[in-house]
Amino acid sequence: MTERFLLPETEITLEDHLARGGGAALERAHVIGPEAVAAEVRAAGLRGRGGAGFPTGIKWEGMQEEERPRYLVCNAAEGEPGTFKDRSLMRRDPYQLIEGVAIAAFSIGAEAAFVATKASFAREVGRLEQAMAEMSAADVVGEIPIALVTGPDSYLFGEEKGLLEVVAGRDPMPTLYPPYVRGLFAEGVESHPTVVNNVETLSNVPHILRNGPDWFRSIGTEDTPGTMVFTISGDVVTEAVVELPMGTPLSDLVFGVAGGPVPGRSIRAVVSGVSNAPLAADLLGTPMDFGSMRRVGSGLGSGGFIVYDDTACMARVAATLSGFLADESCGQCPPCKLGTGALRDRFAALADGTARPGTLEEIAAWTTRVTDSNRCGLGGGQAVLAAGFVSAFGEELVLHLDGTCGRDRTEILPALVDYDEASGRFTRKAG
Image 1 (spheres, rainbow, N blue to C red):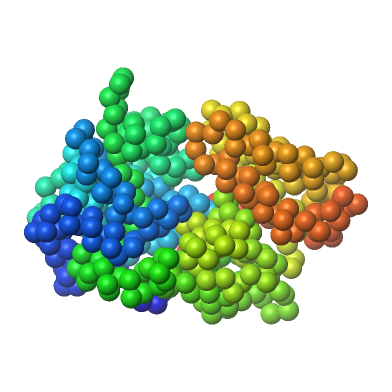
Image 2: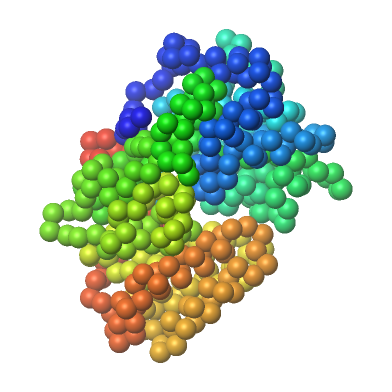
């Protein structure tokens, strides 16, 4: 269970999938019934791998009580900076994902299921189309229709309410009500409760149904059983995508998998996406599971860890990550749009040596206001990120009030586009 998914990777075929027992989990699901399927997923302790870590079986069981039309949507619109795990899984083995979608749709009694991904993920779209066509022709995908939906490059396409808007043919503008309340294709007073699960979450499901909850719980921790596909990028010798047991120390990922920093340098911070507080170097021993990361004041997110060494200015890193959120904020909630921009500008002023005496107080104030009236979690993520930089690197930020720190490198947003096996590095989105 420590298999590496360095890309490019040998692609699994339908024949490979079937030879490994593919299809058996869906068959078993139909034998034991929808309620028993959800009960097994709950007993396994599978938690959502998209960031929130909500127990998957509980989510499914809640939907089984509904009498209204309901749907299942797989969130394959990966866009969190520093993350490449879902694209890795879709490229390598889309068959296990589609089987997981079919099992989930059966368990919740869905009218239909959708896999929603970005149109720019050309290779992943091709693999999904191939898998869906082949599995349908081989009659190993079940009776509930599964459709592929492609959408824009927007970060909010990956937010579950924005995702449902795209599936319904609209722009990714998050709505007020969560999927389990309003749902998909709802008009007027209608509601069609919808379950949204992440690619990695659903890819785990066939293995649980085939091998049993005890097998899954034998890996990882009591808090977070199983494995997770982690991405490691930034100031390390080798960038990578790798599957590791939950609870593996972050230091094993940084030093064991990625080779640590370039010789002669030291690690300053590790950031798990743009919605969690950064971890300073003295917390690298933290186990990578939801509970342990929460206890040190951060979060596991979607398993994408960005490493910064001692050549990085923490004010400039904070400005870069805050700037991403400011750009991606849809503007429906003024406190979020104004607050993300204000926080970006103030961190940038600290980095450039143009900050005012009250800049740090203004950052603290904005972290309490950026979340007002939010329709989605973007503003909340910005508040946690900004407060985390102040907490972990407050002394350094104070020194910026008297000028720059002397670290003048340009920070590039770690928006990962592809992986180059020859160099062991990711390519990043320009701009």
